[in-house]
Length: 608
Image 1 (tube, helix red, strand yellow):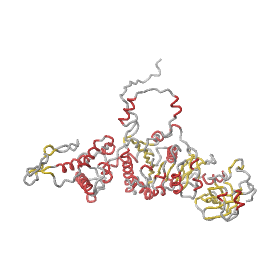
Image 2 (cartoon, rainbow, N blue to C red; image 1 turned 120 degrees about the horizontal axis):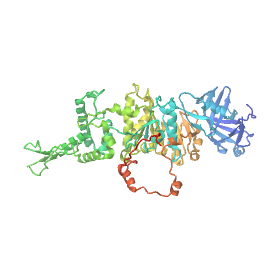
Image 3 (cartoon, helix red, strand yellow; image 1 turned 60 degrees about the vertical axis):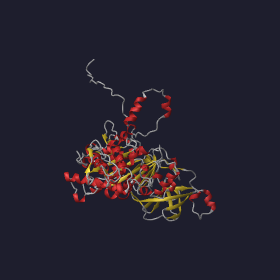
Image 4 (cartoon, rainbow, N blue to C red; image 1 turned 180 degrees about the vertical axis):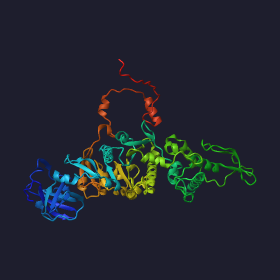
């Protein structure tokens, strides 16, 4: 092609790996070009270029423009013109087939051309079954941007952006696109688990999702996480606090004993009594655990051999009433203390306090999954997992907004462990992770996956990030502070969807995690519009600046900013602060001071 071609930009001046330097043509007198009735901006950071090589076309992304992009060996007079461009090569096309990666490199003096809408359709126009629509190109709004669903889920992804940049809307839009691949919701085989920390998504995805909440509103299911499905260390860390090695052994030995009693009362499918461990998901009673241990700690003895318990009242484990013994006495008359006591009164008092605290009922008194004193439960874990993952809607929302902050991180870790362990061990089954993959969306990921957190949630997220691909469990991290996410986890996210980021530390972490060498493109992060993203990685055919498609107004997340000016212009209408206090005490936004009984009668339209 000649320099008279309207798409002509310039020629290759230097090639270094995937980076090429382009000397712009002198004929480009302005930053605009008119081609086939469409106006194109020339030399925009983030725009695409095309280099024809016979039957093959190479495509790249503009990373830098101006004198700084010039080769270091260039003459000073040439550098002063500023007519240089640095481009990162990203993919190639033969015919209509485009793929990432390069099979060859351009030569010096090869012609470089503007990418037109025809080329963009060549790159993004495919409508294969594994492609989901997310939005449109910022530079050409009639070109739809599609992401590869397989790579998006199995290779993990991260959505990052400052507060107000449109993260929640992007998540809602993306999830709608994912489940829209089926003809209707009922026939969708998608399986998405969304950990909703702020309660934003019930309104946005209510028609596609089943919602579980620790403080359910009408139409939502109560959220229960059986404590006995957790590993013993996780459970004891929550209910008994930090324990020394000797104290930990006292608790774990008793838990093992109670689980053995449960198996003796009736077998559980798939569990060999010889393989039972303290971490096996076998029901046992925390009330009985507390009672047996406090009984041993407070026992006093009488008799010549000091072996007769001096019990005055038996107590009751169901009501957490401790047995009462005759207080020990000084001297040789007795009663005498139990010399084998472990000294665990303090953690036992904390355990009792946790069991009596109604805020933790969703985990310590888990409804149909709460064991009686011998460990029998009305329902097993299969119904719990079926409720979370086996219903007729493609999305499950776990609304954690009502969970006390003191236990939130541990609860998230527990949920993820239950789900991941179940899918890991059922990978040969039809509902396992390989034959029916699961996407786990983790809102506010920086709260529990920070580099120094060392909590159970961080451990299981790291495990999913490293191993989940093999077992059909994909992760999508959503965060406004990517600098606070563990670098190992972020580096495992093959697709990065970056919205506006103002903090330099956050931008630096995103640049370091990019799978493509596109630092110049990432410099656009502070000036992106709300809902505009830069997408790079496995799921994107080329790194792209994209405008996310907004859901309809009634499907937006409850995360929009309050309209201060409108609210303050409106005259205040006092509704009574007793309602405010009622909601505070009930830990439920819909709580009322008193129920109002309204008698409703049907209206006969035929009556005059």
